[in-house]
Structures are given as C-alpha cells and as structure tokens.
Image (cartoon, rainbow, N blue to C red; front, side, top):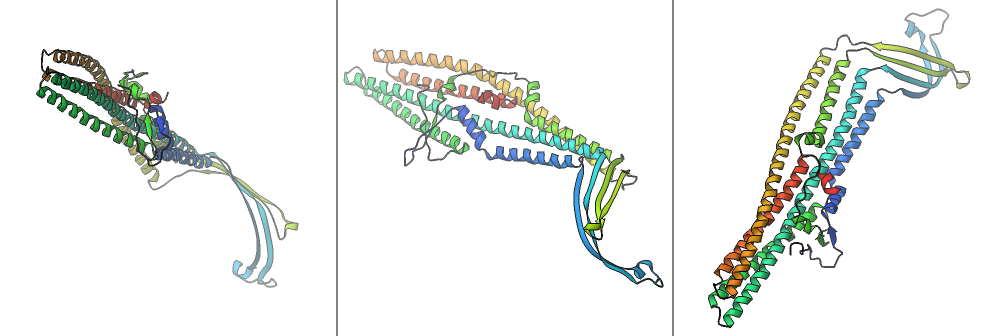
Amino acid sequence: MRTGVLALLFLPLHAQTPVRLTLRDAIQTALKQNPQIAIANLQIAESQQQANVSRADLLPQVGAHASEAVRRVNLQAQIGIPFVGFPQHVGPFWNSQAGVNFSIPLLDLTAFRRWQASREDIAGARAQETSVREQNVQLVVSQYLGSLRASADVAAARSRMVVAKALLDLATDLQRNGAGTKIDTLRADVQYQNERQRVIVSETEFKTSVYALARLLNIDPRTPVELTDLGSFFETPTLQGTNTVDAAFANRPELQGIESRLHGLELQRSAASAQRLPRLSVNGDWSELGLAPSNAIPNYTYQASIEVPLFTGGRIKAEQALAGLEVRRVEQERQDLRNRISLEVQTANAELESARTEVDVANHALELAREALTQARDRFQAGVANNIEVIQAQDDVARANDNQITALYRYNQARADLARATGQIERTYTK
C-alpha cells in the first residue's frame, strides 16, 4: 500500500503520453530549463569578455593608416613677415601617406593587477552559477519530497478506508445475525465516512502538490505527470560524504564566490597603489610619405617612454582608501556568511539525528497500533466487546500513520537541508 499510489496528475481533454519523473529526472529538467541558470551562464560569459578587455591593455596594439591630402600654405602668415623675392604662399600640392603604428607596453603593473582582478570576477561568476544551481536543486527536491509525502498520505488514507469498510461490513453482518447492535453499525459507518473524506482531502493535496512541481519544472500543464520514486519516501539513507562545518566551508559556492570577490578587491587595491610606479612602453610609426605614391619614401619614428606620476591631486590615495573600505566590507560579509553556514550545518545535523530517531519511534508505534486494531477487531467479532474499542484503535492507527509519514518527511527534508548546507545537494541527488 505504501508504494501503490502513482501520480496521474492532469486530466487533459486529449490523451497525451504522461511524463514519468524520478527525482533525478526532475532535477535534470529544472537545471536545463531554469532561466536563472541561463542568466548565470551569461554572466560568466560577460566576465570572460571583460577579462579579455583587461588583458588587451597588456598586449601590443597595432594599427594601419592611410591618407591623401592637398595642401596650400600661406608663408607670410606662417612666418609673420614677407620675404622679398619669395611667393606669399606655397602650393597647392598633393600629399600621400600610408603606414602602420604600434604601441607595446613593457611595464604596467596597474594594468596587470586589473587583469588579475578580472580573472577573479570569472571565478566569482562561476561560483554564482553553482550557487543558483544548488538553490534550484533544493527547490525541486523539497517540492518532490512534498509530493511523495502527499502520495504517502493518499496510500495511508486508502488503506484505512479499506479497513474501515471491512469493519463496517463486519458490524453489518453481526447486526443482521443478531450478534451486534445498530449503534455498533452506525459507529462503524461514521468511521468509514470519515476515512472516505480523508481520502478525498489527501488526493486533492497530492494533485495540487504535483501541479506545483510541474509548474516549477516548466512542464506543459496539459501533460499528465507520474512520479516513479514513491517507494523511496519510506527509505532512510544516510548522507554520503563529510557533513561538517569545515566541509561546508570548502564546498559552499557562496563562500567560494565571496572569496574570489575579496581577492579581486585586494588586487584592485594593489592596482590603485601601482599607479605610483613608472610605466614603460615602446611606440612607433612607419609610413610611406610623398607628393605622390610613385615618389614616396619611408618615414618612421621609434621611441621608448617612461611615465611617472608626480602629483595627482590625491586621486591615487582616494582610490586606495575606497578599495580598502570595500575590502573591509566584504570581509564582514564573509564572516557573516561563515557564521550563517555554520548555523545551517549544525541545525541540519541536529534535525537529521532527531528525525532518524523519530522515524524509529513512529515505525514501532505504528506496528503497535496495528496490532491493537487486530485484537480489538477480533474481540468485537467474537462478541466480547462492542466496536468502541475498534473505533478507538482505528483512530490510533490513523494517528500513528500520520506520525510515521511526518517523521519520514522530516528525515528526508533534513537530509536535503544538510546536503544543501554542506554544498553538495546537486551531487547527492544527481549521482
């Protein structure tokens, strides 16, 4: 009865092939179709291109140029006095030029530090993408577990309804044979109707839970959906791997991202300081210059230059201070995140241990309640007692059943929470 409920979900106007989903299938579907993950991947691509832009400042730059012009020069206006025997102007004449120019940075520590910082931005973007994936996996796992819980409620309610119907038939037969009373039959009938109502409520909750799962996975609402991991709800596997705070510090992508961000800011601060250092470069220009292409001759200029900032109006100092303040702010964010991760791991471990014990207790209580129901039914069938004991035993079974399902759900959810807290939820549920 535990695993006998399959989730036929939607009631389409036209029959369609149902989508059969394991938990792993649901996670893979979400990871492929989620727009937040697509946005995170685009941010990685943007960071990579920004790094390419920063790297270009460290590489040689080469350009080509060509021009053709006609000139006429007023000599008297250029010199300021007339010369006897010389014309007032020269030209017009044509001037043709074509060549290349280049610039090669030899030493620019500021540009180098900025390029290093841009590479840290790529690492941070990748950590953000991993964090988004982990968050989406957590959402899918939680919703899938909620649907499994609703399915278990349906199975339990249907099982109790079958038992209630059998007891109603027994009370009816005993009354017909003169061994029972009308009040016994009425009590059994009331209990049966109550169980029928629980079935209706649990089936509705199951359908709405899987509707939400289908919406989360962006599945066509006209497509029927079936869950195929219903039996796994009653399993209590342990979480593989190291579930300590140190493991969480090593695996959580949020912490990796903030570490990359902090390293990048430190490089930016170093880049601000490096602006005080000399910058060396080699520049040049080579071209063919003449009155016409046929009589052009080579012209060139090659030079090495060094630039040393002497006074910048306090700009460099202000940039250093701003970078330092940003580093301190991110360090505080890192400490707050580490504290939050520690709390999440410790809480999830405590919840998991408590839920494991609760499952054992609930399973034992359910066995006892079922045994008590069997004995009460035998006593009623033998005419030793009325069915008040049976009704009470049925209620005890229902309560024990609910407690078992709640404990199992708590255990499965705590296991997922611990996997998320230690940064391994995708690895745990997709392997």
